[in-house]
Length: 626
Image (cartoon, rainbow, N blue to C red; front, side, top):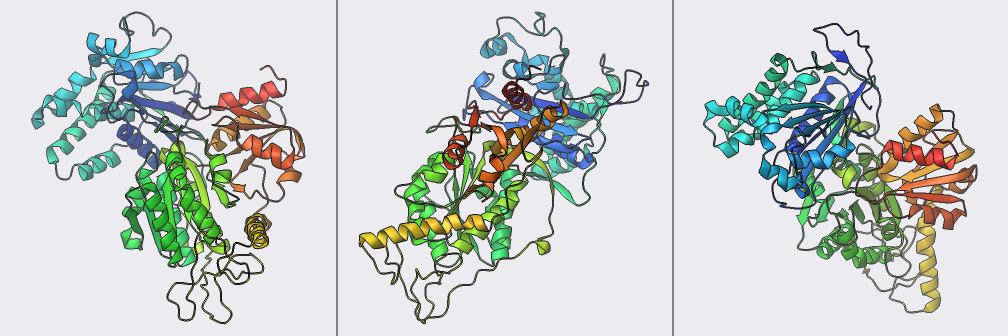
């Protein structure tokens, strides 16, 4: 079970049982407020000082019929007194607001786990909608679990009765009742949530008061009901983490702030042009709120217009950024090719989702790596980066702007739906301590032409249009290497194609050498990953190494070009296992580039890897049958 006990069964009465870590999942209909409930529980855990990882799981249907399995929304929180890297394999506590939530999430529940349900929602109508023929609370099918069937709906309505709400609005407070109960159970502070409710419903005081009353009523129920086998609840002590100021951050938030910080460090204005698409839309929302920081946002009429507007911003001397998910990036492809041949620093953020086409838009996948590295017409090399955690999105956004402006190239930064929405504690950096990389625009008209190059980086000159004596044109047609005039000469095209490729390949010379996340520099097996698989791989490798197996973890942030020591590093391992949420993309790149015996561990369910899935694959690879 994920929530390992610190104390024994000798815990005295009237004292909380102490646990090292707990995984809890809130699940209900898409209108039940599970995302808000889970995020507030996570916030309360962060304030306590626990290490934290969350996993919001949204329904893919926009308006699935209420009470059906298609409309189930869930939010998982893993909070711990020890350092953690994942939202947990299996929840040990499931809060299910209706039969559909129970049916969808029960298979993931830890054996012997706790189920807290609103038995008022288990009507015959709702049971039929969820596909139940009998009530699972009554037919012994939940035997082996600790089941608490509570009258949540009725108790919530009683708690909010003084505020004169309609039945519909009263039941909307039910998630706060459930949250109050869980806050009592795990000794969380309600005050931050009360403050948040007052702010959220500042213009609707009755709704704020009703939600607060429901929160307090759920908490009071836990204190007074004396639920069987629950005692006085549980406590998870603060984690021992590096000193500093922390806050819980989602990948979208860290990415937005990283882009803003990167533009500041480059001394450029950030122009963000985008078109809404799940799961990338939140990045636009967050950046739109940073006008005071000089951020310019533009919601274009389509994906192509957004990319072209960002290119125009970079041409004019700002840093142009655009974002989307895989289908939208496909539409931007021609514009990205234009930025490659025009050699402009365009930043493209791809929040990957399950595909192809519309696919499962709220589910995570890593299937756009080939698209990022090779998915354009002709030879169009560019930089490809990947963030590996919500907090890491901040650093990788800065790195994207640094490389894009230094080498005058488009940069594709890969995240995914899991990273965008998940959260973890983030040590807030001192912006003054970050290394600046101010852009130096070309201003000397002597001998100027736009494709004259820096001898070291091969980056072309970046001149702001309107600078006296530096009038110039760029575009999609091939240019002469020596004059920048339009050229159809075959030898010149060969040379320009090669120099654009050499510019990107040369970036490897300045990248930090690839490090080993854990394990030794040689041995029978290295597990190589990229992107959001980081946490699951790292915890799996730690687990099997504690069993005596000799396994290393290598995680790649710079995917094109890769660090220059990659070939030497990989050659130290007899076997290489590559877990990916796709059908095998990085594994093919590694095999083709380095001729190594890499094998894939592939998953395309729309769900992140579990630690036990990777650990099991490692054991099987090394012949360990545990």
